[in-house]
Image 1 (cartoon, rainbow, N blue to C red):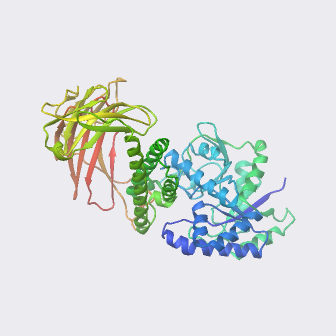
Image 2 (image 1 turned 120 degrees about the vertical axis):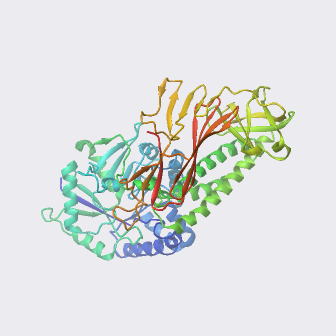
Image 3 (image 1 turned 90 degrees about the vertical axis):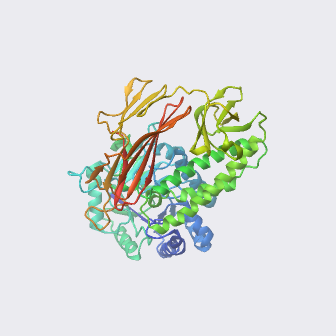
Length: 599
């Protein structure tokens, strides 16, 4: 069988990175796609691949004539829609439902606007992939997966340990498989005959495969294929003697995947049953932490709003499908790899703050309306203030509830709270009378439980917590704090009869790492972690028991470093098998990274 080279024109477009989306919408996309469309009109053999439903929706809204021309090329089979997702997303920081929504909204858009069922997942520039992604892809109707960065290395790895495969079956824990391709070259190649031959030789040595897929065209800031690239590809296609040069095809990526799959049994490609880890860019899991926090909070808010809106719909509320879809689209847009990973310029994150604000507004509005509809059907008559506790999760739960106290309740000495069966639960007034906390027990899944709160002249019932100056204990856990250093020296799991921490005696430790600026040796703070310098804060300015109540007990530790002050709170609750570690940081350091460590 003769060698074959499949040339696929593309342009990797970062929707925002060193520029904002406004430039992408107004300049990068229209200029790139007009260039591609004009080349396709001039050279009928040229095919082109483009991902990201968000890009197409922007074109539909802002550049309808370009959108119309693209639809024509799609119908001709020459413009290949790839990816299937709303954007080229991060694949390690998202919840499972966000991954599903990326492909649900993306594939639905492509089907509605182009009548195309996308088969090739396309994430060439994302920074690593969770092990469950093949399951999401397969169940979303995708068969193939293309990426690039797995072989990138950090300089300090000697010898380097490159990702060993170009073509492999990627299998998730449930057994779902997709045929995966790690590009031999980059995703922005020139059509360079000698470089292409070198890549083909590498592929043949590694897998015995004589069919090479090459992605050519300018990328990141758009551009796509140049006329020179197309002419060189056509020149190579005219060579018919395989002894002179392998057969060259201007192709789509799906054609290559199908052709490779047809011969895969004879080549026995390896099966990877693991995450796909990128050994560089590890700083992206910590930098721009606020967007990661916004993303997680928005995921939880939208899912909670959807669940209770679905229940409220059964009680007569109109389901706010359009509002929720718009909120999800904003969230999916901000999950694009450079944004959520924290590698973009500050202007991008200023814009993102507005997006997250709109998501919060929509989510809270929907949730409040839904809960009000449900609560209106509940008989809340009791001898005090009714408190309805909702559980948005799919299992029965017992957990902490925090109430804001208003009016005369802020002046009372004590409170009592009873559930709908008349059983008293301990309640504790905190934050100088502004709030109260209690444990809501056995709240049913996707359901609620009614409580009644009343003023009292007597303290709440005993909780069974064991509390000392430097230790806290309930029926599940015992936590001990060193009275001199403030380190957590022991966490004992009473249920399983084992110590959780190592013998170092330094749990809940604050560690300061140097975070080198971009112009320093090894400095690239948005992308990588510099681990050459570590300072552990061993001195505590203050260690004291600050809460000792029937619901919660808390030890406070204060530390200082440079111009920064840290307040650490270690809290244990009655009947809850969990310790809460809270850190409040008044941070004034530059080019430093703070880590909380539990050895």
